[in-house]
Image (cartoon, rainbow, N blue to C red):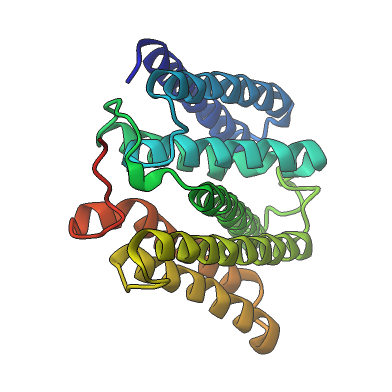
Length: 279
């Protein structure tokens, strides 16, 4: 890590931790008054986080889009940016941060434990199609995390109703079960489409780099598995009528395939051509 990058990275992580703790407090003690302040805190965290991204860019001369650490750095940035965007569009969605911020902390924490060493970009990574590939990858990741967050809120709301405290529980008063169910599906569809663009752009890049559009590399295979998993979720929703609780658990479980694709393959399968050596 560069000096200023390290400062910004750890400071943003501390801010996110404080915000996550604040959201848990707000939900447990039904104190919605602190939520707007927590959202401001998250915005400050994103600004500092952006500073870490900028510091790394200037330190090594290229955008951070390779290695597990850079995946965690940029993946976390897109999740927080997506959270703030939907909260800005609709105040009732501010509660999503209770799921998205801890997720960001986990992937950033995992990334920094891997290899945050500065290095010049490998020649294989200098491609316009790679930029499109990575951009749409993070768009889809952000959308899938939002779908997961909507699922978590749905389950919490359902649990409150099952306990007979729904009338007194105003934590999710502006989010009806129907609204949450609709949001899960919309985020799923957006993520599915951007995921498809990501795969297509990656295939074009692979043709230029390795001479084939598809080679069944572990990362390619897991990317396809993840995409098909979300495609199956759309099918279950549209044709089988999956909604509510089942669909919420599906959105939570499906996110695991994305996490494995982005972070797990590089650990379990060192032979992947997607594990680049910087030079």
